[in-house]
Amino acid sequence: MKNKKELRRHLLEVRSRLSSAYKKECSDIICRKVTGHPAYKQAKTVMFYMPVRGEADVLPALKEALSSGKRVILPKTEKEKKSIRCFRIRGLKDLTEGAYGILEPDASFCQEVDVQEVELVIVPGVGFDVSGFRLGYGGGYYDRFLSRHPGAVRMGVAYDEQIVKDVKPEPHDCRMDWVVSPQQMLELTRLKIK
Image 1 (cartoon, rainbow, N blue to C red):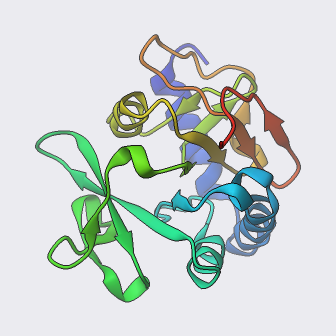
Image 2: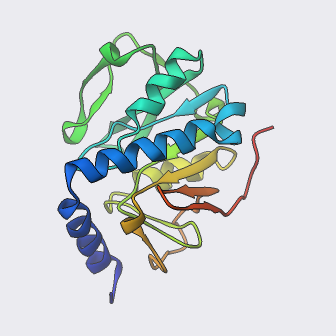
Image 3: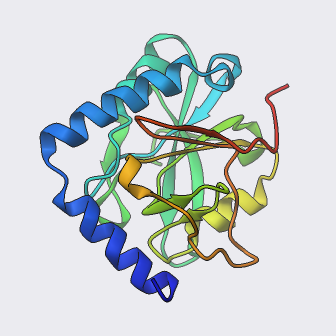
């Protein structure tokens, strides 16, 4: 691939061709790996994402976090500021359709949480490379969010087909501590939960 735009288009096309059954099987494995990971077990406050457009489905892990008493955080996108705010949810009933048609915490009653309180961030992506860099959709939301909070442990999750040799990172691109896929657990650790 010549550039990030072409790579993004290619990886989105690859993901769109994966069968629903395959994605479910892979997502289940990813969720078991996430919830079995020491970083997850140590974290009291975990930020998830609501899967869209065929992303790895982390809802089983999110539900496990809720039932085990962890503080579960979801992002709320502010399109005009191109930023993410963090809100605690107590269940999926706390969600409403937000920016880009993604389910988000209802800010009218969900508690906003300071970004510094998030210990572990489960990060979606269009792709990841073997060095831990992430390729997103191009809006820069996660890069801006993660750069504001360098102390959070970052765990990228993806199908194996989304892990490539090089996503052509730029200086503003943020690196993961781990990238989890059904067949891989790439440890690129920058930080540990204290």
